[in-house]
Amino acid sequence: MAQLIYQEWFVNFRFPGHEKAKFVNSELGKIPEGWEVKKVGDILEKVKRRKKVKKQNYESDGTIPVVDQGRDFTGGYTTDIETLYSTPLPIIVFGDHTRVLKYVDFSFACGADGTQLLRANTEKMPVPLFYYALKSIDLSDFACSRHFKFLKEKKVLVPDRQTSGSFERVVNPMRDQIKCLLNRNNNLRRTRDLLLPKLISGELDVSDLDITMQEQET
Image 1 (cartoon, rainbow, N blue to C red):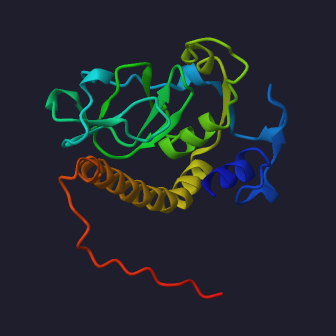
Image 2 (cartoon, rainbow, N blue to C red; image 1 turned 135 degrees about the horizontal axis):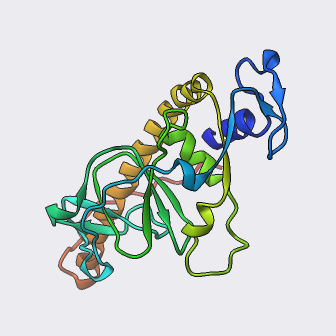
């Protein structure tokens, strides 16, 4: 839903108040007056890095989730406090090899293989807006092992502060719901990873459990 709102506001230009907006020429075509076209690399904020966690050091359980460039939102866990990234949040994690983008609004450790931490250096591009702007960029034509250098050359539309603030207020409740679902999924995965080996080895016996399957009504 949030991606659709981005498409409607910043691609189709049907944002709140668009009826009265004046449009001007730009290198991307007609855009609302007061908006700008910027290279991604020109609006990147330098993010202070922490110690990264190597793949071979991932743990199946721990106090700090590891966010890497894999398809799963978290790749594992660590207990190494020196790897903890906690501010500023939220932050965008970009997979240099996989092109995977992740919006992270909780403390975490960063996977060592090909991850970049991204934020914009302007209040006109808050993290939720920057995230969906980056998601709209197609990097599939670049057949190489590293994509960050190409991402920095891409251009995005930077709206005025009023419009970007409105987008943030609309999307933030949706991001909160997504966070809750991710937490549930992570808890289920941790429970599965904990119980499955015990079930396979016979350490955990469920033969005495009274499990009744209710017939589905036809």
